[in-house]
Length: 419
Image (cartoon, rainbow, N blue to C red; front, side, top):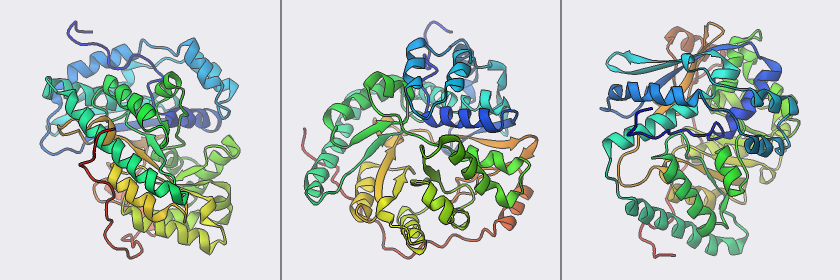
């Protein structure tokens, strides 16, 4: 490690919970999967190739880490984590050779290949590393006071809303989701510390396992797009892949971790598979692309068609949220369906400078292409156009048609008083 840089990842538990839950499910049900992930920076005009050597150094450092006894103790008390998975984690090490860093078409190119249960973890570590290295180089003299000022405004807006709407029994539930695109690890810790002390009435937890352990908070997460994508390349028929993914998940966790992600092959295709069986089996759904109002209205209408009371189900929002947008959604839908809001970049990378928009997604599994067909333009990712066309044909994917709705009005002023 170069002497002017400190390690960005210092604990394997500095990771989103859903990487643990997906690894456990894969270890039990499809342990031999061979996969490939690819990196993409979505921010126009950003060239990250100059970071390649530093990323390699950080990757080599992560490969030296192991889970610590206190981390194992924390994980073992999560009721959905199995004892054999704990045994697996005790001897788990990452392989730096699984990460290939170079360039392609004039841009930073990163490929991750290997066994899914061993290499999937790299996604969050790498995104955190790249985000922080970019921030160190592009904004070396950042003023954290500006970040605290912005955070104070957000906390005050949420507190003001809760004090008014809480009298009607409404609840704004906030989950900190900011690991992958944070300005830095240290800044994420400062943000979460302030949220848990200044906004305790709204903060329900974090997706980061280490921070959940350190701050005594619940850890939140179920599965990501990759869980559905791997079933596109297994021995089930493609048309059955979404149902198989949900069925295996439900058998693994037996009623726990019951929030289903809906935009693997668009919300419309998801709802066709989310029949009465799955709608009763899962606690709710997570929104991650497209119009959140139209999505929520579709979800509520779907539950009602199935004679399920949507007030007993969850709508979890996690797509590029900020506090005003989240409060507006909460005000409109809390009471029709239970709501919670995973907010990431706007909390952990809002210090007055632009944050990177970047992703790492699975592109192949067992030698076959996989794809995510998002509900929003630009969020889909696949390197095989022929496969995308075939996937759309199989699932009858057309232009998404959200229910008509007026433009969303944000709630909460950006000019609030102090705490």
